[in-house]
Image 1 (spheres, one colour):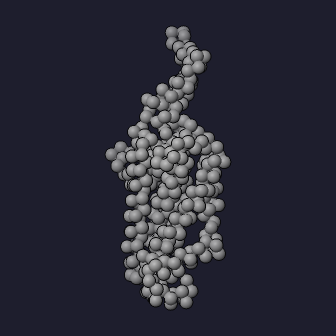
Image 2 (cartoon, helix red, strand yellow):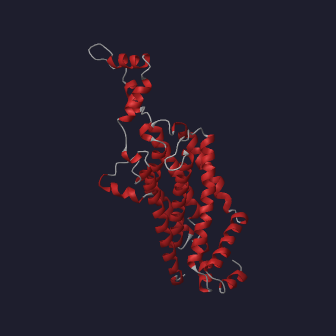
Image 3 (cartoon, rainbow, N blue to C red):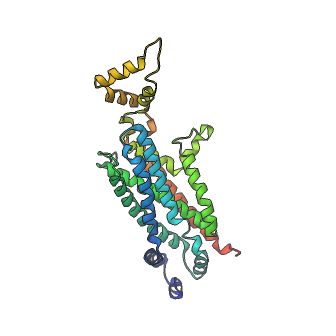
Length: 316
């Protein structure tokens, strides 16, 4: 802010300071190229969805992989949005705080601004998913439309990651430290999501990850338990020429399944024997995931305000 804006902060309340700061962020979006996060996020989403998007919500395997990849895209976008936004202007924030700026108004302006940014990224991500051939769920679990439930989930995941990064940006003192911490946050989200790695005794940790709730929610919205599983069939096909007592029993069975038009029934039967209760398409599962992500947003925001209040103790 300019010296004039700083001076005005001495005579304004929290709401007015929120407006001043929010308008500053909008100017930064236009004139300081903060809009660059939108095309970067679009490229990342395109790279991922064009690889895994065609099988998402079509098979169980494609849904698991696709939703996890999409969740990772959202987490990356959120982290990239705000990991440096506070620490890069920490000295300015310190001076303005001493001049009368309310840190709660400053963080609230960030939170609202980042919400708008995440909303734009969500719309872009859904557009790219459509272009990539993703078969959106037809019927929603909470709303009448699957794409709306999916959009809400993408927005919440992106926003939670965004506010988490904002919290980190309030804690660290330099942009270098922020960018050093970010890869560890990403690795934590990937490994402890519980989607692909057996966590063993550490399994409860997955409840603290945005990626876990995002993947579970998207799988529930995509009706994972109602989809066919192809892994068993593909495995049997690999061993179709295996001989037993001079015969090829698997080849005979597989040929009869295809000949009698029972392939789809076999794939659906395989899926029914691989149901996951966490992916059940129930309002309880979806609302629980949304609630857990929103709770994280609140916690991250509160911690951001508390830690930033220590800014006057900086000894730099």
